[in-house]
Length: 230
Image (cartoon, rainbow, N blue to C red; front, side):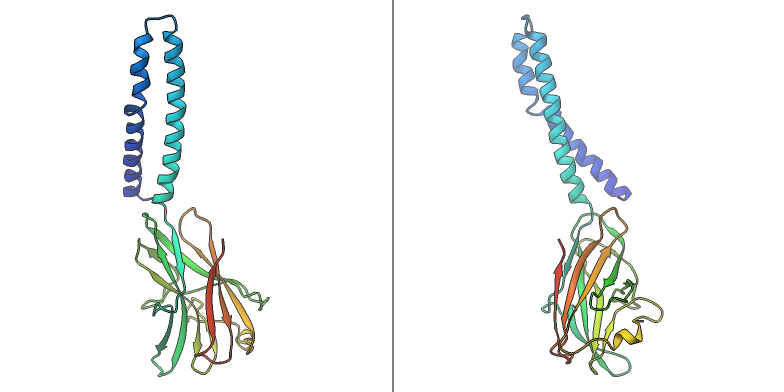
């Protein structure tokens, strides 16, 4: 959590605590003042003080947990053909075209998420494949990005060349490096599952999801969908 986020957290915490100690909890103590001179006065005051302390601690804990969840980064991952950058035909400098399959990744939390990386964790249908980092779309492509609230970035999973060759979007110099023998393993009529992991420079667990490709052998008719893992 950055410096500004820390001060914001402290301020929100003070507003919560101040409301608890100066709000409704003062009413029972005011009522107990009527009995303060009786022999039961100390007992009443003690019981009320203990109850108020326990209740205040519980409410404070509950609000603090909610505040932390609200302030920390939170990823939203989408693959929707309606979004042009998610499934688009892109022209290249050599005059060729490819259908690029990408995930839209958005930070919907309040805190900035630094150094978010995307990984092709596995393709179960290709058991010899090792995990590989994917690139973020940009000029030039990036291996990790900082995500600001409500400003989406796009992670390229693979592209389908107009010659019907499938090329995973691995990050490197040069990019799109993939075992040659595995490039030729995409069989027409088969379904392939690209399991993707996303992780930023924070304490959250890696977020996983799967891009499913039903390979028809035609770059225009191949079916693509995305499902997040719970």
